[in-house]
Length: 312
Image (cartoon, rainbow, N blue to C red):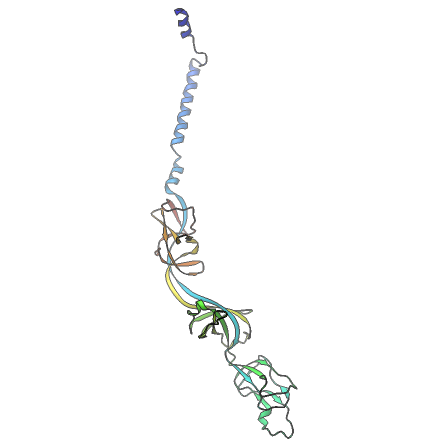
């Protein structure tokens, strides 16, 4: 029995190759295992450097700028001052009309003539209708053959001096910012932009519409017609401070925040916003001039993240 056990123990293992071929295969397996292990532990140099520097982020430096505070209004063009022309006598007809709408007239110029009636006791001047002021004929409200009356509608409406202005409606919440003398940019339908200035501000608010009114001068530009619709932007003030793009501002439950890159780390700062203009916004508190602000802030950046700032 002992002899048989010894033979069994010395029987060669035929599952493992013997000789040089077996030893070579084992060495290759050991080297492959080592390479796989090192690859799992040691990252390539380029990837390691990228992870250490952080992701690239587009930034720009906050700069100082001035912003205009404006109020936008709308309304219709009216005459600054309108003079109504009526006859001095009754019971006669219009015999001749000498002007047309839009004509420029002088003070005392004859606008129309009336037919004289034999035996009527009236001076010759009573049969002539004259312009009481210099200006532009805004509207003719009579015709040849019509009977005239001192108590009836006026025969002509004269725009004194040819001056027109925008009668603008202003929300009551913004009425307190409008003041006489403020400059305004008016967009007139069909003409484009003209410059004007606030001439008068109404002292009352309409209880039904909750809006007030202001008059904005447009000068004597004869291209601007009475009744034309127009919009105006009134400059009511200005403010100078730190400026950043509006795209850099995030709005969350706690208000507005701006992400700043400092020492290659992201800092999230709550800010106080001011005026806006042309895609930029005034920062009154939270960011200083020269700070590197993330130009397009997003939720993919968190407080303390390491980044690589790319200056625009």
